[in-house]
Length: 160
Image 1 (cartoon, one colour):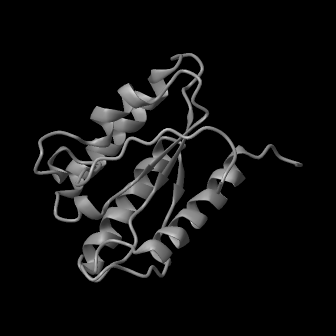
Image 2 (spheres, rainbow, N blue to C red):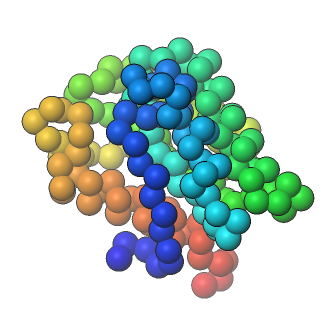
């Protein structure tokens, strides 16, 4: 295993932070998170942005704000909810570099406003499938290793 503990995954192909990221209707992260996160959840990792590359940045930011507000209130409004790690999109040939960088900046800005952790993936070199969009097995490993290191850092008590 890359990291210790129990992991719950709620993946949906084509979803994103904005409501319009998917052709399947509103399957945005904020819509799905409340049904996926449990009261005992210590950390929520939400990764995305490539599917939001062609959405208005205001819609992306609104989706992240809604997600982070929902997660804060999800557990116990007085306790502040679980820690949140927002992971941004990597640069891939099938998406405009400028659009991905703009989404990355928007995600980082909103995460900071909500005191959520942010992990930019702009500098990660991934090996990709022939579609020039999705990581191949080695690319998934590279991506996962980077996220796992950040998860371990966030969940490791100081001085340990």
